[in-house]
Image (tube, rainbow, N blue to C red):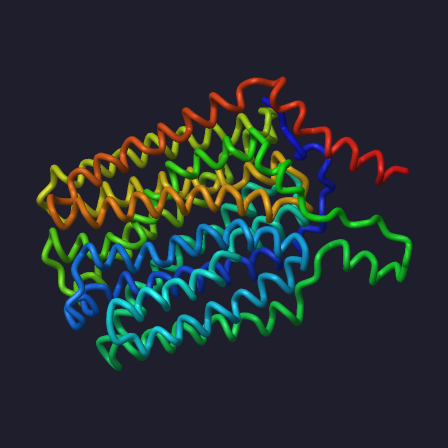
Length: 432
């Protein structure tokens, strides 16, 4: 198992890197607050506009279909225009689209607004991964990814009580307005303070003699990369489980456990606390293995294996009638989901150059969202015609399938060695 680009990435100043991670964490929190607003308000909106569970899955998939396409395209855009402009512009777009949700009048407008929201939201993780690739080396980057991906958990954690409180106090329309404003506030420090390491160096040295920045990876090279497909398949099976936790858990607690919006606001945040800890633990764990000499990719696989085992515990929800134990097993599974996520999301920057981090991660995100589309559509149908039980069973086996496919593709060193040729060429050009 090779280390990819991990051994040649220079170490960057810790203080500057910490500032970058803080900004990325804030962006991810806001991103997930905005997308989670609908799931918190789902019981209210579905009742007010007479929307069925199957129709709700259409709204979720409207987001995911556009999200899937834009994941791939946004990764290429970020590699071309840079992290600063690409991510900043995306946050402005999705914040405005979030506020537009306040004018929803039915399932059709809800589907349209979810699709528009997805255009901008697709940039947050490719942008964050690209920034981490620019600022951190192999021993640091899974921790950096784990920290900024804490927003995956902090966002829903904050959204549940925040959106519930705003909705109960001022109405659901106000919830979309106030959460949308958060992103418009965030872009101010982002544009004021963020610069890539390369730009900082050029400004400080006042030099015009700089290395030519590589362009985006050719599409043919991207689509023929076995490593990209390996990570993509892992995410195809893994990410839909997290989408289920994001978009369906509040509704599950309402449908199967009879919780009101007030009770959901009081209890539904608990699994997201566990996922928050899991993301950080997953990043720290694999980084410790790398420091002890374990090959980078192998360390990520170990972390993903632990996460897959823990996520499988979620199926026990179908056996418990007590809300306490349901929340316990949900929390264990959510912890494992983010333990997995901190490692699988680091693989693209372990295997490819920082200049191509946005595009390669975008392709794996396309596959992840495709899996989410299929799983969400199936969830809506199964829940409406049967129950949540088959969904919980499927969520228990999908991550082990994903990691099995990943291992089968990546375990052959000869297949991986060819991926290093662009790196070696880049190094030679830099030295010359």
